[in-house]
Length: 361
Image (cartoon, rainbow, N blue to C red):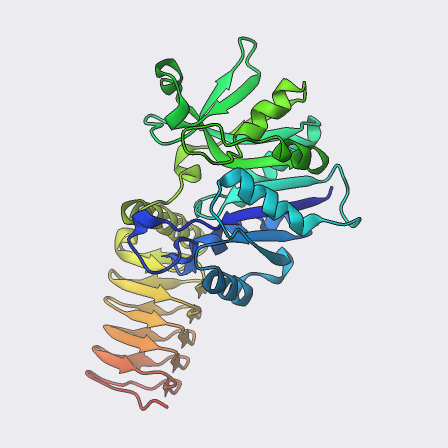
């Protein structure tokens, strides 16, 4: 099964009120667009086309530096913001040539859906292929669907079209099943459908959602997979960013709790997704583990410890300490109120005592 992906990361994200491009806002130690790329891991795409636009140079540099090798990323630029349909068409140019099977699956997904799970994308593609669909949408049912395109079905339950919020009638606005902007398409059908799109809508843009009605009207099969709304919601402002961070931190903490880590209060324990932790580690309230920090077996960390890109040896104790790019040896006892500056190290079995500052580089 041949799978490739298009990640739409060209938007400006004006509601973020930030000079930083929207796809690069951080959640649990990883930028939003990189969370989306990592969600493709089970599918191992042949190529992942990143459509950049606003802040293109920044986004490209960050993704090039941090994307996993298996993603095989390529970049295409949407110079003018003419809508998601235009962005998808630009993304398709990354797959020109004879190297791609016409019946291959192309996943299209937004760069601002950091809570998307790898299992969900795997199910989306499996359903798409098993049913020989032209398109398969990921949908969610929301209590408040404001702002999302509504999924309009025929009387027999088949998907007819998607209508955007601004273009919906009052009856259509009552529909609670929404399009999440995450799709699987058959490659040979997506390109021609995109070429039929027009800007005859309230925003004067090419809507990717219109591809669904194009394919359905031609008699092609359009399928759906439903996912929980808390997984598919996008991030458009700082409030939604904070909510997404809270959800992802809860998932991360649950993962470590089920893998031999004790947290006295998970709600006051903050762990980036890039951190590694051994077994029989105890994390006290106020602990923040960030970046590439690695905690060895049997450690006690906290309370009120912040470690960024640090390596902590097994059986060490680190209390009321701030450390950046530092090392703590096996069995060392650091703190309380210690400072570990960049490049510093504490030897194995050392007891630093209070208010210690390690010599840095």
